[in-house]
Amino acid sequence: MHELSLISALVEEVSRDAQERGVSRITTVNLAVGKRAHALPHALLFCFDLIKQDTILADAQLIIEVVPPVFYCERCGLNEVHDKLWANCAHCGLPTVPAGGMELEIRGYEGDGPDGGKENKN
Amino acid sequence: MEEKKIKIKVALARDLLQRNKILAGDLRTRFAEQRLAVINLLGSPGAGKTTLLEASLPLLCGQYRVGVIEGDLYTTRDAERLARSGAAVIQINTEGACHLDAQLVGGVLEELPELDLLLIENVGNLVCPVGFDLGEDARAVVLSISEGDDKPEKYPQAFQTAQAVVLSKLDLLPYVSYDLPAVLATLAHLNPAATVMQLSATGKSGLAPWLEWVESVVAKKKRGS
Image (cartoon, rainbow over the protein chains, first blue to last red):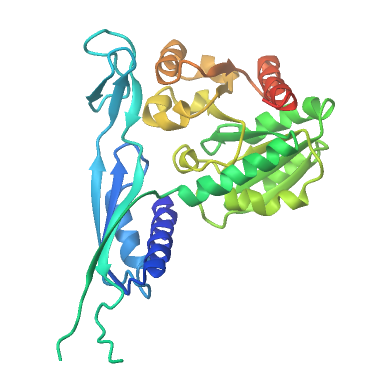
């Protein structure tokens, strides 16, 4: 259950950042997950619903964007997207290097701002 | 009275493993100050990580002050096996967690004496430990013949992030269906820079290249590079 520690880190990071900004309630969190990042989106969603309870993310929805594997040719400077484990560059035939598809990145979040939900009477 | 709601949108672009990366960076600084060489040993359960250490430690302990951190979900069995070698052994029980992280490693360092070489045996798993930097100088993956020849293709990241791959239990080769040339070709594609070694730790054959590789990691750290 490696997804559980990833989601715990996400909830911790977002909560801390939101607190610093005075955000009272979070509605959505955007997460980019590489196809080769060793994390299953459905397991991440399952863990998110468990971990978010009793935090300022309790009402939040997790939106996952799956990032496909990208391979880069250092000679041609071109990126290629495919599902193979490795491949030679389609243009020059030299081996390409993995350049994407491993990311686990909190892209951002949305919520209610500092005065959200409350009327400041004074 | 109208309820006031200000929507806020925050762009973070923050790595989910950032906290571990920061802690691993702190460990790396600490290891550099101590000129302590650190090797993170990965592999499936039963790949022969502990047996490899058991065979290597008596030889390494003659040259260096060696410590071992044993990562396991439960039990101190492996630590007990290795303590006989004369190395300083610390057990971390992760209580179900599938990998070691920098915080867990940092938490036990105080218990170790002054060392030249620290070997960290990660939790048996080719998936989860991959993303967790422990501040190591090098990562070695142990892959046994009996696991099957398809494993590098099934778990590419473990092999792509390693500096060394140890093909263990080579003495079993005559008894199992295993395409060794195909495995070597796959490894060459996945990670052309990795040092690939073949050995049998129980048969004590092929250990020399492995020990030389470990020595090269220690020598490099002593030089401060």
